[in-house]
Length: 411
Ligand SMILES: *Cc1c(COP(=O)(O)O)cnc(C)c1O
View 1 (cartoon, rainbow, N blue to C red):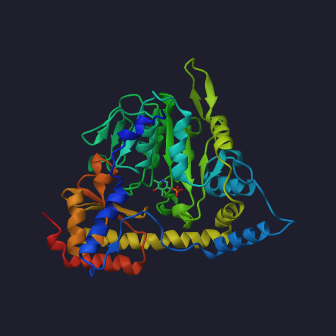
View 2: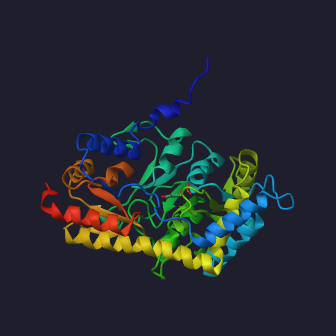
View 3: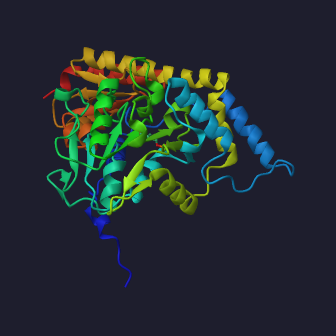
């Protein structure tokens, strides 16, 4: 008899975005002439930029010629891309990262999901609440949690992100082994200061814990006092792994390219206290289970680091940040206190009622779709995530529709 991994049965069934889609569908069916504006899902809307497209096409042409055809690439990524990343994303910002420490992949979702394979099942994990659901769910699948009870999984140390701590959690008093951090944050849009990140690094060093740092939204940081990479913090190379993606930086959500940085000094320990470099374990894992990102996609990603590519992709995040400012200002004007939207494409609005109730009310009254905060964790209750990934016209339209019924959007 073939048996299932019963950890999967612990997963709470309603996946946030499918539940949102289901409710929107139902509404559209019963109101066929209402125009719906979606400020919900975290997917980009602007196309790839010209420099990226040109590199992509040139590489496709190479693949079609005898002399330049390429089969399997290196498992961990082509050197030209690993070097461009180490230089452009890290060394240029004073973070010591070498090309061999960069692992190219087809997405940060897979990387943040798969990395936990390297660790024992009985480690203690700390996960922010609210946050990108992948971190919790993949640990549930791996059997690192108890069952779901009262809105949370047993055995997880949740790091509450609330108004009181400015949506940036402090290290817990209890000891944990693995910590997930995501800044600029999805969903709150909160950023972490250098001092706050340094506090996490010293906590991790003191307890031989590991920080998994998801910087998927790094290109939205405009405040120059904020750290871009955890590797700007002294001492982090021994206790941190960083994940980045071209998805939100360069519009690659449908093209697929990301990378993970594991410094050579970064260790985890066996039961006897023997140290194992995580760089070696992840290399072993990737060369066994992954066959690389396609050559044209890696060429397209490398074009992001050319002067023209940098200028063009900066234009993408500038555009979304322009949307974010409009959303933040106008939501605040309607009486919803907001965070995020300044160094992030997400605005976290305090809606002052049950977040699914607000979702339904907003859809019904204004025809605008946002994401209910509760879907990202218990601490998201009472909030909504509003995404700046849309056209200027749609953002303006959504705000106008909301302003027209603002007085009805309260309890
Ligand atoms: C979008 C996103 C990613 C990137 O995922 P890809 O698989 O690279 O598209 C990673 N982390 C967070 C928090 C995200 O929102």
